[in-house]
Figure (cartoon, rainbow over the protein chains, first blue to last red):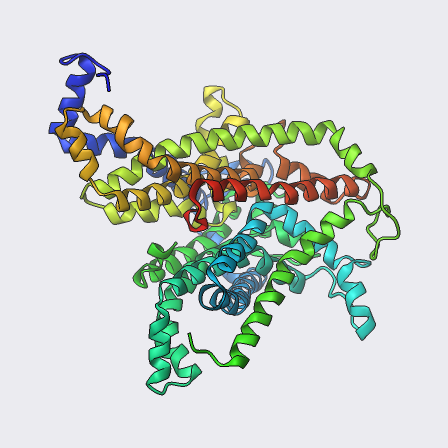
Length: 296
Length: 268
């Protein structure tokens, strides 16, 4: 290999300085990422939340930069926002629960029962739809739920009807969208669990439920929590799927969106946006204790 | 492993049903792209290839696709640089606030997209507009790069953890300086991790709609934005369906590439 720079050239001298001073190397490595994430990103978030304490002039629509708790008072006092918040959290929890229930048997089959060859293909089969894209899948369910669509055709012989666009359709669509995010961490967690441990539990007389509770659950739980970060937070902030399959239903995301767009009331939108952020930050901090962030 | 016959059968059925639920809606979209009925009545009465040729000639679709590709490449390039730098700092050094970096990197993707969207929109309008920079492709790339960093960061971090520092020390002992070691030793070892992370980052960006809505200017339309704008127009429905079907078919490509890179899907 030929030397890129002559010994003693400026590049080489600079490299030597970096080599002798790890602190300069570290500062160099951290500088741009931190400028981007802390100054630009966290800065924007902070600026947004300062805005939450401002108001808009009712006549001109301009932002009035005077400290004011009115937005938050409105949020607390007007029951419609409480209802929407509860509904959004409810949908997010329902999505997470549905996904865990559907994901666990699939992940267990993939990790413990399928042959290594089948395992490879199953992982691909679960992963591939992830690349198909959010809108495509939300659109697919819009087609499924449509009045003359597949679901209706499928349910009509047994006397049923497609539920139509609404909160149920939204929950199903969101659960479908984020399902792979739940399957993959649980699968990875179960794969790390040696089969011999499950066999040993059986040999020592534990029945399936007890084996599940004492051997499988401690491994699956952090993995499921890691998956739930995606299923929960992605559902909590969603407003697109609701618009596509939700009919007239409103979630927190819609309130924020409408206030930025049609109502042109950024301060109130910012105040509403603090709700999912607060919920998510509390959730992430709680989750960090379970070690789930390392499972991502 | 010893499992009762009943449990095995139940799990197998759950797997099959699960895969069916995953794939049926996608196949319905594929079949509907040939459905002769404009309103997608099910079951289809007849088939036609007309929608595909119409979508292919649609100028809006083409330019939106091109915008998406540019945004994805730009965001991925920035994310590769920033994610690798942060991963090196966290994996190779001890410093105050080291644990916080992981949390910081994951924050843009963990927080609801609409929050990131309006925060960036607000910041861009206050900071960049006075400088004469309007919302456009550039701001889309900045927004996407912010939440793409995590994919590169995680991949490179895992790779660095596995590599250790022995080869780098050997390289330094043989007289290579810091840059030479990175160029000839570390980077080649990181390449597949960067590719896997970059692929995921491109896919995230290509698919993103919420942050894009708030960071794109009036004239900038990525493919997801185009789909969403046309989703509720009945006369565009067949074209939207073809675009969706095409994206479903194309989703096989990155999976194939990922398989070739790693031979192990868990790398992505």
